[in-house]
Image (tube, rainbow, N blue to C red):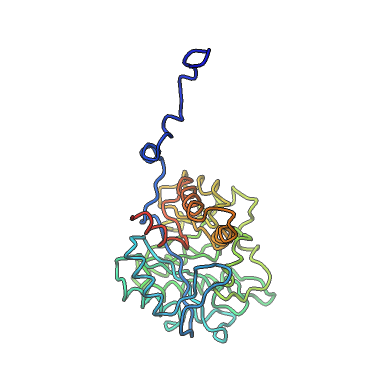
Length: 331
């Protein structure tokens, strides 16, 4: 006892004294069902291709993707988000492979649904950037600018072929004005009212997307600043949120996650629909690279980063560590 008597009388450290006590009072808990696994499937390869900038992540073959989906079910995660990587010579200005029923993404959707049925939520990235020879998320006009309304027509077609191929959820990520409303109408027109829309509501023009460009074999020249959001802005995100909800989004997403936890918290506080966050390639690569150098404890850093995202308000997290962490949680 100090000379000041029993001061301090309130001792928060009492609740931190043992691992069991800390676990009992933890306010945020991770669960396998929180996670969605982003996965890349590449056309024309005979075995998985490692992504150099993302150690441990690969471009899948159709067969290895089916295996990854089965492992995701076994691990108990919520879903898988598929990205298609077509052969380079099939890309064109309209992103034709993205609406070809036999394009790699549609084929992969059918493969995965055949493998897992309804045991895993099968999601599809709804964007043109993987399929265009210019690498932008939409159709270009005569001056090389992304034509918003022409792009919406392509998104409507993509939504329909992805639904027909078996997607439970489509994820429009191109940040075109009006995309959610057009996609909802396109799905309803073909009687697919059951297909949900996970809106990439808040998607910033971020330096952390770098490794993803390798993952999808991006052909991008220039940047996406005319349609993705300015990292300096907050009110803009809330405006996008209001518009997406008005147009019929079933779920909303913030991307990237870690650098925008303040935005994620504001979105989560404002809505009564499920909120997701995407822990993107650069976030993944930074932790993997620092761990490889021995600068941080890899496993602890992964869990801490995911806990922070959930604490900020994400009900679901897209992360490349989805299956690994789910398995650890299940032990």
